[in-house]
Amino acid sequence: MDNELFLALFITAAGMTLLFLSLGLFYGLLSLMTRLFEDQPAGSGGLFAKPKPPAEVATTEPEAPDEPDRLRAAVVAVALARAEAEQGSERTAPRAEGDAAGLEPSPWWSLHHQRRMDTHAATRRAR
Image 1 (tube, rainbow, N blue to C red):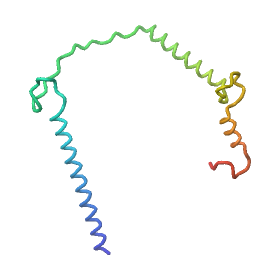
Image 2: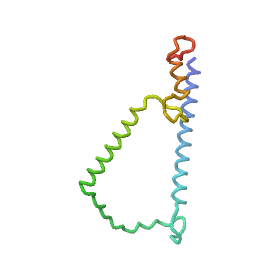
Image 3: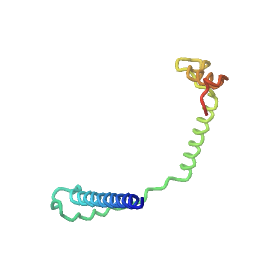
């Protein structure tokens, strides 16, 4: 019994070692290939040329908007959110697409509520 257990552990260790060695090999190959074949501008000297440092770009701070503009934007956002919330609370049940007055619930909504209200245990879903 001990011999079988030792053999299983040995096979597992050997397999894991080979797996991690192959993963390391593939990672090394991928990183080597990306360094060799990365996109370089035309005339930069081929595959093994050192990349040139990027040109310095003047960094300027974007102008901060005025405080009243920020407050006005916040007020508009809050007003829109409240309008959407009030509009959503008026509609309690989904309406049929073709119903202009919006008084008839959709067939799917009716079926859903009919199944929930059904008292027969065989037709109810398990929760």
